[in-house]
Image (cartoon, rainbow over all chains, first blue to last red; front, side, top):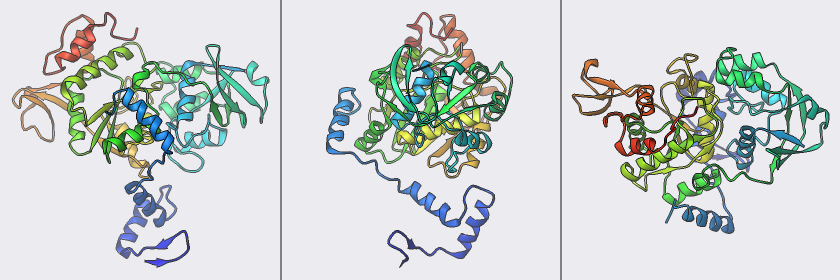
Length: 70
Length: 351
């Protein structure tokens, strides 16, 4: 992987795959192959919801009280 | 102050809780028009069912853009709206784009024609939450996501329902569960049409099913308080987005999802997902299920080698007719414990 900016890095994919994606997204709302690939990977690795310690405690207690967890 | 209906209050609370993320309030005109035209918000994110706040002309005259308006429901103030925009709408165009019909016999169209002519968009803040019809089963997206994490479910299939479960439903749910970590049964509580099961019956019948036929650690029951729109394919996408916001990785879409009458083809609500590869939740499609007398259980056309003469379809309408007369559907069609839960109610259907 080559570092491009602090925010993004470049990843190489086979040209054949790139061209297939380009063909697949033609006419869709995707404006680039990169946008499509990023979305697919984001779906594979979704952001974890973050909780403060206090919120965790409140939610855990409520779920326990309602019988969802023990 | 502006008075809103109880259904609209639920929508606004769903915005505030994150269930309708990325919405932050009832839609402004730009978002509304792109939803009508493309089934997407103005920033191109998938969104198919407009969430609109309509107000009477009299109420609309009382405030302008930039004002903060208090929203009330049945006299109880519950939210503040910062007015970003007031605009009009064409209800016929709306009906055609969302419901694919302008027929006033369609319940969603009829409701559209009944609404006020002025729409108001802008961010909202809910300061008084409705406790819910079934507080015991009402969770917010942050809570369900936490719950899935606590249970160690990495993949979760959401199941939308407005029915008491029959064996066909159970088969679909358990088939999906075979390849995900958890099942999220999410009955829709709210205004429905005459002949649908009442909310109480839906909850109690699922309680009976859970107690007797599900593993405690692989399935969970949470209510979704939201009005049915009967918008078929458009509503299927809306239902999927809502389940994604709850934290589901998958969403089950059956035959004629969110349909009514003959307004939509039986698999249109599945086909529309082809237009949304960027939805962020994976649809699981199911087609037809039936009880096979020879196999001795629920089957589908891909796995059962027997002929139609051995197949008995799961027909909700037929089961409802029996139940309405106080009769019990066959055990191959509905679990006896579920039937008991339904028949405990003298009026199990919306009148």
